Amino acid sequence: MSISFPFSVLGQNPSLHLWECLHKARAPTVKIEDFKLPSINLEGGGICEARLEKMTTDNGVTYFYQITNSSNFSGFIASVEYNDLMRIIRAIPILKSQSEKDVMNSPEYLENKYVTTDGFQFGYIIKDSKCKWFIKLESIGANNMLLLLKDVNSTENAFIVALNKRDQIGESK
Image (cartoon, rainbow, N blue to C red; front, side):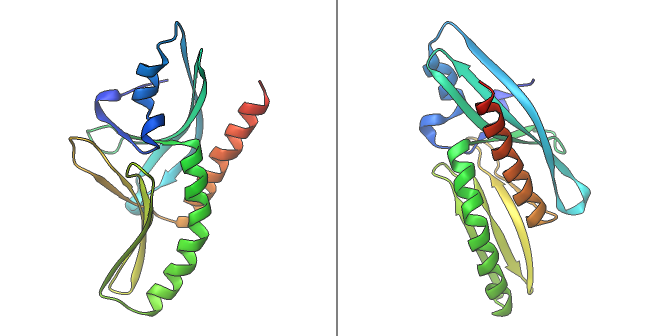
């Protein structure tokens, strides 16, 4: 388990922000468990490690899907709350359908994305008739990071595996 708060890029509902959850817990105990998930493949051969983080306090349990891009020196971590991850997964088929139509229209530049309430972005860019899928990690006080994905389908599958893992962990209580 590793927590890197100084460089965290948090992408979930602000009321469920990981850092805020830790501060608001004000509980005698905070238990954090990490579960490794399939990595996300990036264009150019890079990868982002992924994990499911379960935070248990006396006030309840919260789950976060975390993406760590260790290929740069800043150690960015994006945390997406479980409900936001479900919304992103529901948006992906819609975005895929729109991307096919948008490529046929051959715009000079087009960007289409799903954005969570606090800025985690998943979408695509069309430039020169080529569609590139991305995840954009928003950071407070730091540069935003745009991660170009190797394949939207494998990323979608990685998100689904995360939801299934959360359901599996939740059932094993």
